[in-house]
Length: 543
Image (cartoon, rainbow, N blue to C red; front, side):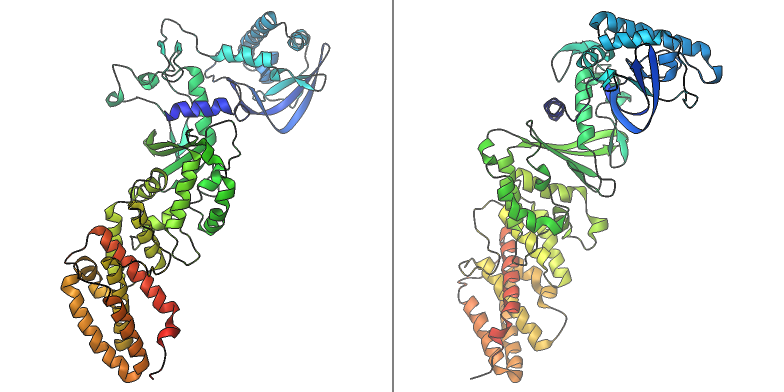
């Protein structure tokens, strides 16, 4: 499917891709045709889209209306390889005569007439220079539609006794299949091909090379040019207008349809955290009205990596841009915790590791992408690893809370999760998390120790609260007495806060499910933040 979409992309944007058999080349000379005379003008740093063909060896394979001086004039530098130049020039003239006979192109006739006159080549010309012809100082001969049609037909493979003629997988037309696909793609600094079977293990029904997936010349060229264009990147960073890389995985994205002005780039900002808040504010404007296309899958996402010269397709997604926009906004809103900052997928995926730069795996990023773009719930392993990190560090940081809130929302249980403390949420797991935060505060105030309650008891309190909470409450009472000796009012307020939370819990759960553990952790974080921001409320003197 994705190859068909790449072919479709090339067909929808002909302005981005040269015609079949054409490519950009550096031009060294512009030769003006004036009657029977040719005037040579040295070109400087000029590129043009011109007829082109792959050629190798010492044979004669001319290019229509453009080429090197040995083909166009039979010229050889210093008389070297004179015979070879003569053969090449003869082939060039024969092709030009065929073109004139078929098309009756007036400008090509003028060139043919001029080439039959004695020609004095400039001293500065080199055998490897590439030249084009111009007439009346304004028309380049190779730019006409007639030339494009003639040359496109000429460069396509012609069936012969050795050709593998079959139905193209992509367009369905009967045509010679390409034995080898010609375009290489650079993925993770490795040159790769889309289709290739150059080892016995990859062969199918005795078909080798690219014949295992029969593709006609035109389809191979279109999908190749499209993917080559989409993979273009800024040389200084890991992203381009339609792609970015995370580790050894490359994400390529585009919109179907003839317009490329839907600003796909703003849909994929996940490696640029400084822009996330601004981008979130712009989403409603950028994609306003695109939900009208809900039945048209116009957003395409292709996930690639490389393996020993082969292109590995790790995933492909088609979805409505309106749906994608909604999912992106959900991704951004899910991680909001009231700090005024949003995090990239890369940061969120790395939160479960102590050293993300070396420990982060491909699957970690892939799981976050699957949730963002496919609405696949984040797996339990993320939560388990995060809870272990919280206990190991003895503290909880904003990125931890962002992952927790995102994980809970990804489970699609329909519950709303607030940015700050949710006073309406009386679920035992959430309330126990808040209780644990207050007890940790009391412990810290009483002992002044850097060894927090989280570092010792977070795992037990969040998985088996009935076994541990009673002991923690008892210890909190001892600690309140100690605080009272320093500041009675502070102890009273902390005690009231703890009691107010405990009274809402009818029964302590013996164990808590994974979702409840996440609720516990989020309640713990919310209460900790609340204790910090409302410090003045608990720092009062005794009556």
